[in-house]
Amino acid sequence: MMTEVATIAGGCFWCTEAVFDSLTGVQAVESGYIGGHVTDPSYAAVCTGRTGHAEAVRITFDEAQISYADLLDIFFHTHDPTTLNRQGADAGTQYRSAIFPHSPEQRAEAEEAIERNQADWDQPIVTTIEPLAPWYKAEQYHQQYYANNPNAGYCAAVVGPKMAKFRKGYAARLKAA
Image 1 (cartoon, rainbow, N blue to C red):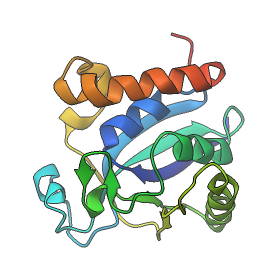
Image 2 (image 1 turned 120 degrees about the vertical axis):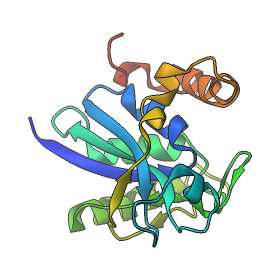
Image 3 (image 1 turned 90 degrees about the vertical axis):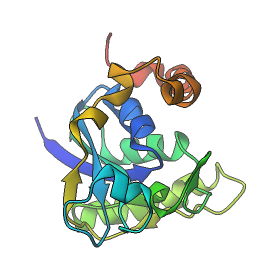
């Protein structure tokens, strides 16, 4: 097994975590905060938009089963990378679209993914490539949030429909249930 780590931010981490946790080759997905200036931020603090952190996910994956490039392509097709600091009703820098490469090779692949995926969008992709920064795991109740709360209001209204759309397009890549 060739384990690697990817860190991405694509709006609310509940949506992002649910998508990537369902993929074959993904061993773990952890929700957390990255890219800010406050040490050990809380969800309440990040939600103010004043810490500089993005809600993000850290994905541990087996490169032999799914590539970093594949993860990035899925990332670009499961959120709107053309809206600055916004995903749907969630607005603020904490919901920005960003990639935090773990190596120069991942940075180069992120740059290529932006170019490759731009053709699928009418507006320019505004996803940033940011330096890897300290990672802060989100509070435990945020971990596996959709899996544990599929009928909660936000999950039923936003995450569920996103997952249904995702399953249609990526059924071959999903973990066997």
